[in-house]
Length: 171
Image (cartoon, rainbow, N blue to C red; front, side):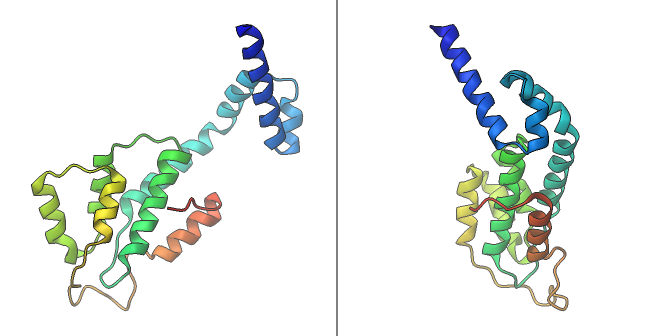
């Protein structure tokens, strides 16, 4: 019974995988069982996955928000990049490291919040932290905005990620 169930599940997975593939891959894997197919696909796309992981991590760690810009948009972008990194790229990141990445991204007007959070030693999940930060109100520091252009423009990053990796997951 177990053998037949295992075989039936394997065949169902194989059919689902073949159905979702482009025709070139479908013909290449038509006589391959599901386990072999997964192994070959991993090997075939391993370098692309590594590059994608690196690019997402680089974007996540280098995001900077400018004074007088929308905190909600910034956090939504950070959340999307984190989701692409951890879910799509299967990159393991602790909540503490993800929070540290977000803490390093706001402009100087958020310094008191950042220092206070670090000093209190609070412990939140990444999603709880983002929810807490979304409610934060600060006064921008004069002189920190240069012609309305930030270090990284959120819309430019969203367009880059969409063009490079397809549609972004929603929050």
